[in-house]
Image (cartoon, rainbow, N blue to C red; front, top):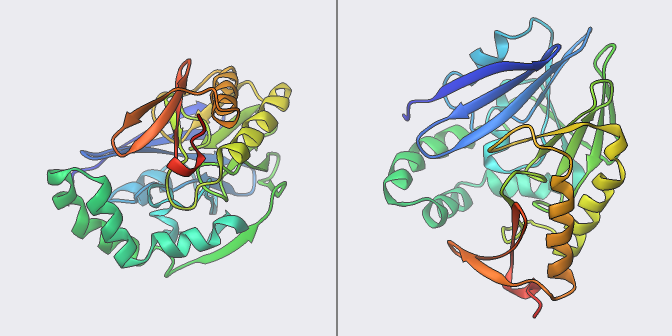
Amino acid sequence: MQKVKYLTRPIGADTWLIEQHMLTSEASAYLIVGDEKAMLIDTGLALPGFFEAVGGLTDKPIEVLCTHAHLDHIGANRLYNKTYLLEEDRGLLTLQTTPDYLAGMVNSAVPGIARWLLKKEMTAILRDTTAAGSYEYINDGALFDLGGRSLEVIATPGHTRGSLCVLDRENRRLFSGDTVCDWGILLHLDWAASPETFLHSVERLRRMVDRFDEIWPGHHKKPLPVDYLDDYINCARSIVNGTATYGRRQQAQYAKYGRVLITVPAADRKQ
């Protein structure tokens, strides 16, 4: 089993960042606590120590809201009694927790020594991801009242068809999952939406910037200023209108603008 270190730190009143650091990956989850209950946004890969790290932050009952159904965001769902996910990612959840699919993904995406380290433990961990607890599939605009604190679900299809962002209304924070990260977004993966759809998603977020002051993503640097949305919009527009120039990252082609890049399936590349 890989050695895992979880770092927890407050980012505001009754709001915590939980960062998972291990040899082959990093991921972030967020705990938002109201007067009556708490919401955990994403659950990482859930290697040993995650449940204890989160549990030490509050004695309120905890529910889970996943920004999308990729493996590195759903690993500890099985440890909680209630998990919410957008309806559009229902099929992806099934796909991502299928042993054959999991093994193929690790084989194709992870380098040699890391593959050897990950394969057995990942299969064991994710085999039971949906075994316990109850899933409830929600839609765009769903609202959660935590007691004196409300969270709003904003559907942002792109990285997956069921990707979402979470708006902490009272505290003006947007939790973006993988929709907005500091270096880029992957649209070449299974279950991703089209560049046109992703463009609509980030344009929608841009129209809402009077409601949040900063962006807290699922990976990498955080928080991000809201003007990252402008780079994503310009990059996605260049793909859609055929003016993008492309590079290659591992097995995927990408377009780049300013601080961000977008990987693109060959079928969506326009020249």
